[in-house]
Length: 135
Image (tube, rainbow, N blue to C red):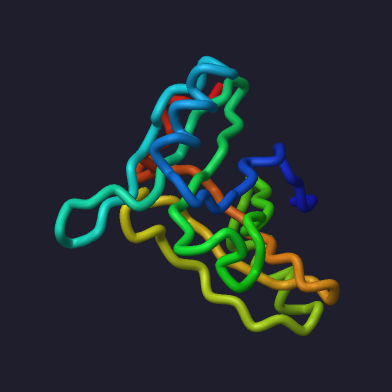
């Protein structure tokens, strides 16, 4: 089977005021909250916003405007076969571990490219909370 990226899955951004950013993207894009990231106290610290066509914006609260790394967090590519992609990336010299997202159930792994950009690869299956938003 040939490696295949299906689409850009999401862009992850840090937000100084998470609630204001969520409201703005909902108003600007008509985006719907597809998943909320909540801590053990039940406080919302992030969301996935469905923007249509199976793509998402992932927003997280950042404690400061720079958060030590800027407001851009990472790129994510949805793939057909997460294990095949992980094997391919390992052959390129990266150490990766496929795991499920703690609150969204998505199969995923991360690598950092030489310029410092974090890249996530993900695959949706029946345990993904975002599955119903995909086309």
